[in-house]
Length: 310
Ligand SMILES: [Zn+2]
Image (cartoon, rainbow, N blue to C red):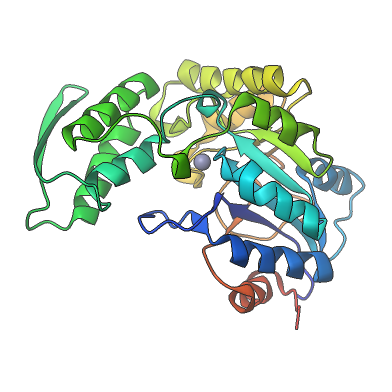
């Protein structure tokens, strides 16, 4: 089918040599993507997409640009480029990452275990009730160690996960404070973004929780407080949501129900697919965009949405 519609999932505009989740798109590449979108598609926010669905018709080539998590790049690199291209975007922000002096836990962990400053030697952690140890920088590739530690930490409540991350960073002999290249938004910056006519702010839980790992009450708390805290920052209703970690297996029926109960009008996963006028508005797909130039991006739009920009 030609001229379909999609939501695109980005995280950062940065050059990051240590990027195990491929979250960083080079700023120049993002500019190329936005130029293509401005010229060949109909870019909309989540709120505009919802209205289109209510009218029963999503115009061909509708594209929703989204950014997850709340890196400071949103103000320094991304908002100026959106403005230049005239492309609106929806930004899903982790409420307790705002004004925090730490990096996102997956970045801090990557710095301590993979990057040029990474530690070497035996790392011992007690995760929950389970004591584990890893030989870091030994025969097992650092990436494999990283994935293993990451998977163990992901399943823990936020407080414990953050405490364990601090332990790993200290073990590597690194400071706990965020690198300027990996810092998160400050509240004044978030406030400015929300006032930008091209930007809609959406929620992404309080602590970037892995919802499938929490009990129902814990899931509701993460989803509700994420919304309330963001609304206090931006002084306006927050009506869209994106599930952290975002595959359906990371979410589940309980979280879906909590998102509906909390009153979100739309919610996004991180699994690819096209936007359609029917289907569950609390399970909308998004296409993950990696670092690629304009040509690669054009091929992606063609392959997944039948949008020809040649
Ligand atoms: Zn996220």
